[in-house]
Image 1 (tube, rainbow, N blue to C red):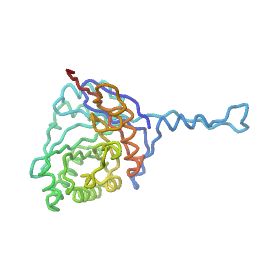
Image 2 (image 1 turned 120 degrees about the vertical axis):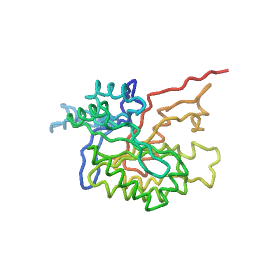
Image 3 (image 1 turned 60 degrees about the vertical axis):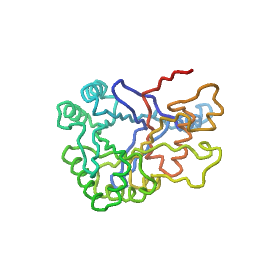
Image 4 (image 1 turned 30 degrees about the vertical axis):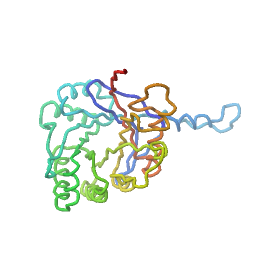
Length: 298
């Protein structure tokens, strides 16, 4: 699978996938990878051999979305405006969650910066879908286990989406416990139903194949996300395919010298291939980092 490279100075991370068409009832979209387009182009018969006109293959058109962090509101929104025609979606990295489960508007959505950007985006039919980011392990567990608190948070999310004219919501709940998994899945199911025709997206961790991650695979491996449920209740699944570092033992063994990459393409391919066994390829979006680390080697 191949995606285009992308990046802007003030935007933290970019999500790239190919362009889609969506059935509002089934909540699915279709896309083609460059690799598939190249493969099929090799199957088109030449004029000297074919009596039937060869089909015309359209080149892949990538869909590009970018997170714009609330702590870079002024510069990030201006940068996005300059490059607005590049995007098919913009994602204000805009909401956090209090320990009681209430949403917090970290981006200050009513500011002139966001209002200008969102109005310009919608005028060009570019989707605006903000991210809700939460990483408080204990608070997530407590809220997800309570149907009352889950429902209260869902109502807030739906209200925020409707009041601000957003096209959907992106759920990025990290550092969850494995025991939270069934309750988080219930949350996604209930949110999906409550959102109606609005998009529900999920940003999730990258998973390295266990055989590549461990020399001896532990018997008690447990994950905090249910990929089956995420595939069912998320219109888009955005894989955070970065911060690899030394997790892939097989690639570590092959690499000469220091090897602590942010996202080796070979590792990203493994991550996406594994995810695609459970999550529909029509929904997968690859997260591309636009940052790096600087190491002092001694």
